[in-house]
Image (cartoon, rainbow, N blue to C red; front, side, top):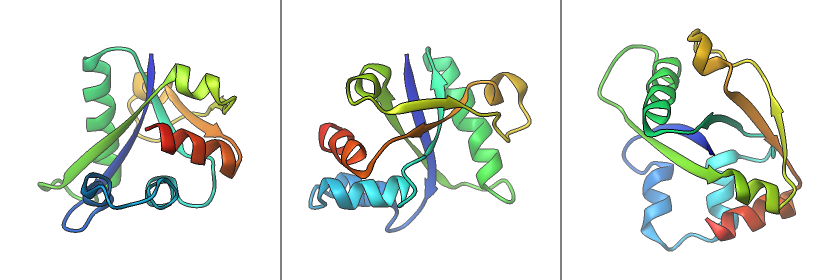
Length: 120
C-alpha cells in the first residue's frame, strides 16, 4: 500500500526541480507540500488504482482538458509509519466516489517531513 501526491506542472515545474538533483531535501519538500505540513494524498494499492487516482485528480487540477504534465510522488505506508506521521481520512473532491473515499491528509512536524523527503 502507498500514498500518492498528484501534481501538475510544465516548464520549470516542481518535477523538473526534483529530477535536476541539485535541490536539497528541504527545497524539494517546500516545492511538493508547501509550508502547511498536511498534504493531501490518495491511498492506492494497485497500478490501476494509481492511474485512476491520477486521472481523477488531473481533471480536478485543470480548468479545461489539455495536454498538461502531471507527476506523482509515491510514499510507502511503511515510510509514513516509521516516521510516525499521522494519517487522517478526509473526503476527496474529485466527485468520483471510490477515489474520494481513498483521500487522506498526512500530518506531521517539519522535522518529520524533512526526514521523509531525505529518504525519498
